[in-house]
Image (cartoon, rainbow, N blue to C red; front, side):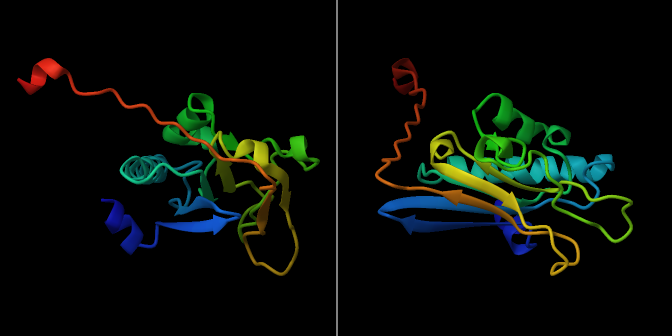
Length: 174
């Protein structure tokens, strides 16, 4: 399913090396209307759940999930879960920590009465200490979505991430 979503242009994962640390960026494109349309909401939840399942099969790397979710995080159960239970941070919601405006609009749809926040950057717990700035560049250069930026300061910070998996029962092996 993950590859189908990549082929459809719904998600893509990239790795980059910064100051000797490998970082993973996962771009997702949620289904239009996910804030109000139940079918779109469920499809976006499935999309992000599939991405998270795929990440579980890959090397454990510091990760950012970013993109046009087309909904609020609380609309998408799997997003709400990783924020509330797994320590991921919605950088836009917490922008005040870095001197920004929390929950600043990122999207001005043609038929909308007002701008909304539909674009997100979420960082895993290991990356949170490295975030130094979050900003939305609202301007007329972009028709619908404004650039949402996050700055990371790598400095001399060593990224350590530990993943513990339950081992198979020894009794089951015999």
